[in-house]
Image (cartoon, rainbow, N blue to C red; front, top):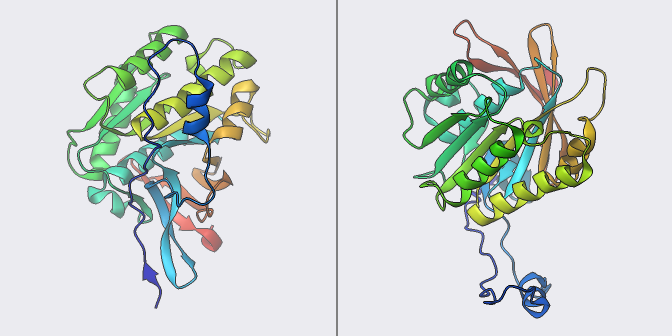
Length: 285
């Protein structure tokens, strides 16, 4: 019988002190970023998994997202991307969420803040989505912190999130971030420089906080990829990109791109209480 292995080791960044000077020290960068193939480097610890998979004689969590990296949910408007985000956040917290999505699990979550940032919906609808997560969990979770940034302009949104990550009371103890959606952090998704800046922020935030970040991007109906330079930039850098397709009230989620073993495709619908729940996996879809 295969043994289930927990992947909860702490990722250890290179312990090299930064130089006390304003100009770039390329000798320092050389030491910090050199990858020694003779040294054992532990893999990034799992933040969220969806199911398990066998490897050799063991069974491992199938990684959706790692600490120190970011993922993206992609789908057309009203495809239930936000419901999927709610399922992932609830699964990360735990509690009764297993009754809705049995395969989604959080790892090493104790005492870590969850920043759930909505850039599109009003405070009323943001609160509804937040209450949905708490209902799935079965109780209010003290470390869950939702925000509605619809009234801000793109520049202020980005600066505010950067402050939350680096200077607020949550800094240094963030486990999971969700940003719904990434396009509202810039004025034009076809601005190449701005798109790369957003993606760079995602990589910097997740690395400095050793957290996982889930973001959401729209794509046009019938299109294969999210629109704009922002979509292209995020597809290249994200650890996992999940596509969401809705048909007849059911949304199918597939691991379109991943750096890990792909999770099994699954589907979700909304129950009579307005909560997302799984309705099938793999061959059952």
